[in-house]
Amino acid sequence: MKISYDLHTHSHYSDGDFSPEKVVGLAKEKGLSGAAITDHDTILGWSESKGAMLKFGMPFVQGVEISTILEDLELHVLGYSYNFDTELLKPALQKAKTAYLKRLEIISQKLRDNGIADIDISTLQEKKGMEAILTKYDLQKELALKHNIPMSKSCDLINKKDGLAYAPHDRQLTPSSKDVIDLIYRANGFSVLAHPGKIIKDTGSRDKMWDIIKKLVSARLCGLEISCLYHSPELQKELLDFSSRNMLLKTGGSDYHGPIHAPYRLLGLYGIDDSTWQEFHNRLIK
Image (tube, rainbow, N blue to C red; front, side, top):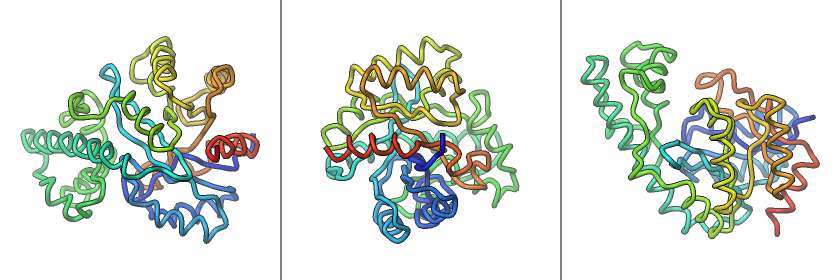
């Protein structure tokens, strides 16, 4: 399959290395026909993304990736539209941002308690901009810059469940997956479960992944991300067959963050071809 569209990328408005314009320009250099900027819990990059898409002759799709919780599992729900009702989206994005900040405060406290580093989250937020989404990656960059802790080491400290500074999402604060799916629907968008195969990685259970998918489809989930880093060719075929049987959107993307944050996630390595794009486009314009 020739990848023509990468529908899952990130910019510096969340935890990517580059501006939306830079990401779109790189997509053009790669020979892609289009890309979607799907920053975590923010739509701040939409205006810049739109300008870049127009500049490079690409279709502009509004995209976002919202952090959610279902049955103690952290799930990321992608939202796509040509015409989102942004006023409906904003409360859920603010809730996700608040939950993430609380998580970062806990991580920061653990870093202090273990004598690793003293990082003030409020100061870090001011540095990035009060409207921007502060992420674990911002903490990692601060640890590298001010405390000489390599990215690989800080990743283990913060992201691994046995890491000294690990903190899970707060179930009470983080939006539920089903609520976010419903919200995206009401806001004129289409919801897609990002990298469902990651559920297998997180739980060790293929059955759990299918159980979650079926529950979300019952809650009006519109699609599945099929072509992505976490999926073997066999799993991609299973997800593709399931999506076809259930008339779900089929998407794909590299989850590109940039060469510093995630050098192994290459832009355009995963995505969708022209015919799948046409199906995706036709659903969005209805």
